[in-house]
Length: 165
Image (cartoon, helix red, strand yellow):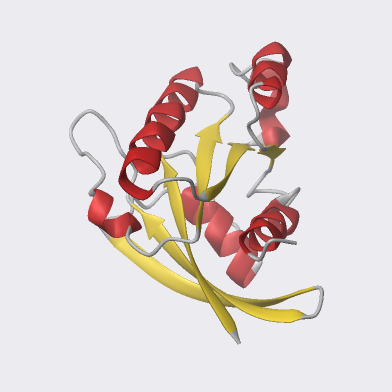
């Protein structure tokens, strides 16, 4: 059995915990509970002919008062940079976190997750910015933890990349 560590990175309240809960437990709750420190859960999935256990490290959201401890990233095989599409500042934070992670780890598989696509009419991250990121080589996916749209596909896509498939 292959085991891979995946870290969830992003600002506070972008939906990291909700994405993990939707993926692992197939549930969503509108109740917001801030993550303190790190919560680790695992999920087994099949990627082509391989059984993979994803160890999901749901890290607290970074903000102006709380910086991410890079030591949490040690041993990471991949990470999801989660952005709240309705809050443009969370994209800027995700891009900065990617730079920090790259400095600490070197190149690691990652996806930029534009979450809350059920609210796309309220998005501050426009289609032009999304296109620009893709043209710069970013792997960008859209998800909604609330509806489940794109969630399983996102984690599977990252698992495939970590396995070199």
